[in-house]
Length: 156
Image (cartoon, rainbow, N blue to C red):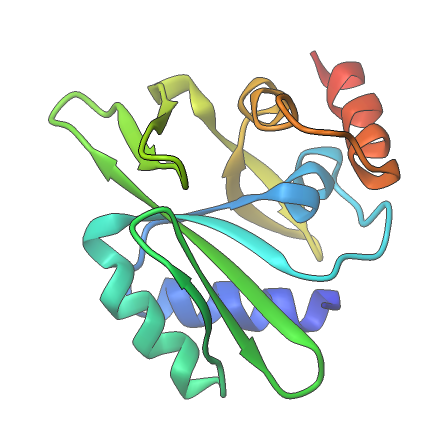
């Protein structure tokens, strides 16, 4: 997934008013302000209320559902090795979010979990360094995870 594809997805979601935040490796890069490694996909936390609109916007860019594990996540793919992994987050009245996980539990997103970063010289919403570090626990780390953790730790 290259930066032009990432920015096309962000522009399409922005045009539809979909609330979204860059997460995963691209989210780390947004916080750092530059691409630091190759990325297979674009992870996005999306307001669950906007999920259907997000999927329609991505369909117009050629994406279709590849892996459906809702309510935890839905991954869409398009020609050219373009992948987007949507993580629907449901918000309460005071701004706390909750995302279902694959085992019947959930992830919590406090209001401070949302930040801003830069991709391709453009400000983008992204998950905070502390929130992204929380998501890099509880599993066997890969080289890309260790890379991201080093960058995230330096930001705290």
